[in-house]
Image 1 (spheres, rainbow, N blue to C red):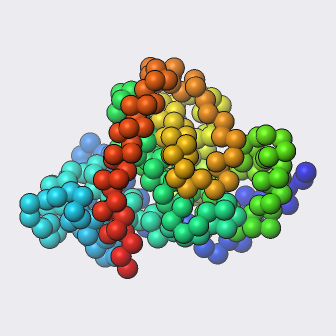
Image 2: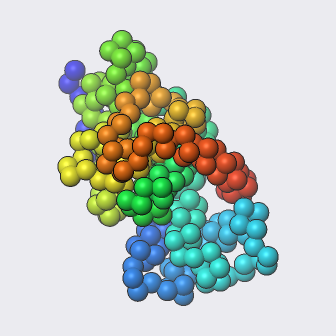
Length: 288
């Protein structure tokens, strides 16, 4: 079937494309720099008052159990660490549009957020266990892996039934059905957005290949971690939507990461405990 909507159509004609605040993007880059300082991170965050307030509120949430209240940005960076604050900043920046209903994917309010955060946590756990990539980078990649859905959902609303019907009839994953009906999938749309935001190439590849890690050339430990994290999250029933249809898991990821398949049981147990602990952060995020 010929595609009727191009990637350019989505970018040019979708009024509410997801966006990352400039401050959040700067914090991501600065935190990964070898010359970054707590004062520098705080100065960047201070450029976006709404984002700064949300980060401070998250830093003071019950999850971190700090003995004293953190009252300024630089202190929060010192107490929690640059990488932790970078992730908090990303969480605070993405929650507003990741928590929306996405009808085109059969996702209710907060379903995409639940899946994205779960994938971030799962990818981080896999990265730590394998030692093949940076856990904080895996968290970032996991959180952003499905960003293409936010842009594509509005175009799918009158095609969802057709895509689901094809996926079930052909017994193929939802992303394969997307490509059959539209000519591309949410992974490609996400890659397009990642390049618009000028994200690091390794994050763009994780967005692009999280459903097909074996196609990433050369293969990437970061992509493998996100793939396993996404599979784990969907298998737990977190934010299933269309992606839960006939998910094509790649066992080769375990081989490349030097893990035994049995490691998934250990990761699952840690994942469940960790996710439940984050509930206090979710409560803070939900506040206006």
